[in-house]
Length: 77
Image 1 (cartoon, rainbow, N blue to C red):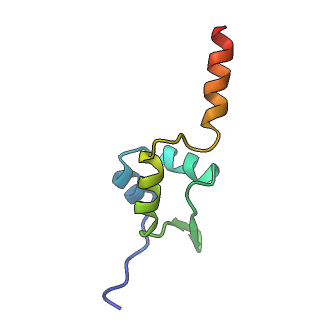
Image 2: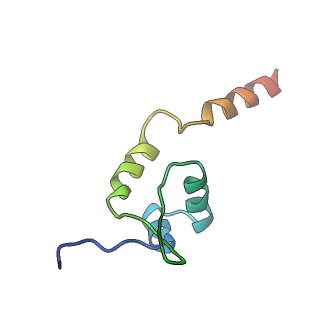
């Protein structure tokens, strides 16, 4: 059992991504992160770090961001 990875807290995950805990809440609300409820606590699978990092660093904007860019362009016309 020593090889098992511990679940991460929201604070640990925020530190890993160098974002605030509020940003982690936003990622969960948008469906980019899946939280794990352990009693009254929220935890995250450490294996998700690489997947989310790849998503955040990809050239394609995250889901929903294209709409935001369209609104900005439309507002400037």
